[in-house]
Image (cartoon, rainbow, N blue to C red; front, side):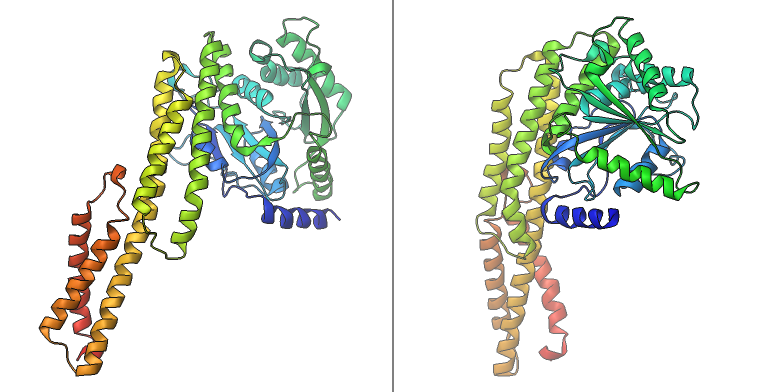
Length: 452
């Protein structure tokens, strides 16, 4: 029955919801947020609940891959010079109602950007601030009570100082034990850890913020049946997060902005920097970036579809130029009232937005330019062969005339493809390049049997 349900979910999601090809970085191992995540998440449709992991490292990645068919890297050790850690988001067709965020603290030897903090406490705070449910993986197979208290205290350490009023929002904590789980003992340890994080105070209470459940997930190599049962229980529990009162599903395109705001709050609390106005403006800049990118992607989509079919779009240059300039103007309007606090971030996001859109437009231009060149060369070939068939040979003046016509046809059409704001080759340069290409083509054609 479970296999049948998963198959049906997969079929439905393949029709209506896209999944990411691979996990997308949200936060680098060195603690800097990755704004490009917003454009990657634009391909994921539907409103989703967010599930995050804390702890476990390799085991967490393997569990996500086994249970949700994600593609997190499961190499035991990073390649030479490669950093391991950070936060990554994935969407699986087997869980169309979820976005899965894996967090992994930077190793002790990794330096962070600009004094950023990327340890277990920072990522624990990040996961609890972002997600509707957090999968907690203990540090060993059979942790003692002191080990459990310490592990949860590390997760909760910054949350009380960082979190804003939750308006009654509760987070589901799912403790993934490797052996038989004692719910009462695990919750008692977590409650003690929460009390310590709150400075020993009674408010806010653990139960007002969290619900904790424990699920046994032994290694599938040790007990395949128990693993399958635990995986089924976990999937079932996570499918109804919103209905059970744990958060509200949000569009995937909004997750990056929320993640950045949460991470900035984590960093502010960790470093002692005041963050109120700066965080609000950074969030505003993030939303402006995402809204501008989303609008541009929607406008590019029909153009991309036409180009994929081999079409050369008349007036593409002017349309693409208007899209590029209009998108940047939309972004500028959205961030016009931010102060100098976030000026550098606003400028950096604008540069990223411009670079990404220019790359997309350049690709569409290049494909059309190549299609146009092939089309004109093929027409030139047909005309030469038609003359050859009628007269038995092609006089030089006929070759010159057909060649001139081909160059004029290319020049006339390529003019409408050139995008002024890209700063690429000019119309004259493109036509000159095509002329050289046509010469080489004509030489090869002249040696072909049909022309002999």
